[in-house]
Length: 423
Image (cartoon, rainbow, N blue to C red; front, side, top):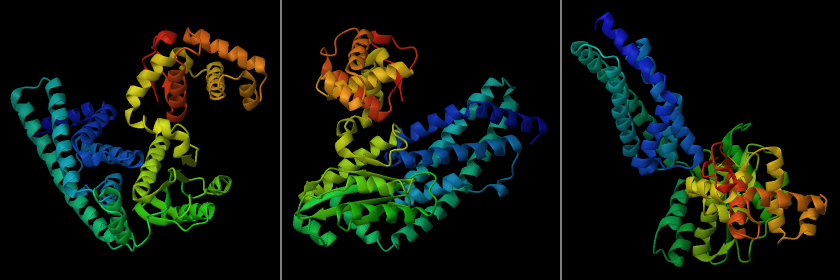
C-alpha cells in the first residue's frame, strides 16, 4: 500500500476518533435495541459500554498508528464482558452477532469519513478496501479470543458448587405452570410459608474479593432476620438471597444498616415479604425493582434499599424518559437545583406527607411552623396554583425526582411546564 494511502487510512481513523464518544453511544444503543441479551442491569450495561469503547479505540488505534495485527489481543474490558456474558448464561451467538453488527457500523462510519475527504476514485477505493480488510481482520482475531474466554468461563461457572442450585432457582422463578410440589422438590425446601428476597452486590471500591463481600452481605441478612438465607450467585459481583420462615420474616433494620456501614462497597436491595410459591417469586421481583431504583444513582451512598420505600417509583423506573418529561410539566421550576428551591421542594414533600399539617411538617423537619408556611407559599408561587390543585401528581412527581435522581434541565418553560428534565 502506498504512503499516500496509509495517510488516507490515518485521516479516516482520526475523523472517527474526533466523534468517538457520540459514536460509542450510538453503537451501544443499537446493541440494546437489536439484541435482547444486551438489555442488562446498570452494572453490566456499564461493562458492555466499556467493552464496546475499548474495541473501538483499539480498531482506530490500529488504523491511525499502523499497529500490526500480531499485536492485537482482546481488550481487558471486552474480555471481562465476555466472562460476565457466560456467567449470566447468555448465548455466545448473541455476543458474536454484536461483533459483526459493530464491524458493519464501523465500516459505515469509515466510508462516511472517506467521502468527506473528496478523493479521486482510485485512491478512495484502495483506502476503502484496506480499511475493510483491517477491520475484518481485527474482528476475526478478537472473536477467536472472545470465544475461548466465553467457553472457558462457561465451563468454570458450570462446575461451581452452586451451579445446579442456581439453575433450579432460576427454573422456579421463570417456569410458567410449575406447581408447588414440583418447585419444593427442585429446591429441597418448603415454599408454603413466608419469603423475603434480597439482591446483594458489590459496588466499586471493594477492599477485597467480591465473593468475600457477598458472603458477608448474606451473613448480615441472616443475622438481621435470625434465619439462614438460601443464596445463589447471579454473577461474580451479585448474589440473590431468600429468607424463608413459617411466620412473616422480621428484619432488624438498625442492625443491618449498622453492619453495612462497615462494608462501604456492599449494597443490598430487599423485597417485601410474601407467601407461597407466588410470594417466592414476587418478593424477588420486588427486590429487582429496588435494585433498579438504586441503579439510577439517585442515592449513590445508600447501601440499603427497601422495596417498601421505593415501590411507587419502582413501577416507573423502566420509563425514565417519560417520567422526566411528565415531572417537568407538573413541577416546572420547582425542579431547579439551586439551594433555595431544593429547600422549598423538600419542605413541600414533607408537608404533603404530613397530610397538609404545618405543625407536623415543622416538627418532622425541626424548623419553625412559619418557615413551613413561607416555603409552601413560595412553592405555590412557583407552580402558579395551590398545592391542593393537582396534589396527587405533585406528590408523585416529587417522589420520582427524589428517588430516581431526576433533575431540572435549563431551557424548559419554567413553572408553566418545563418539559426538559434530565437525570
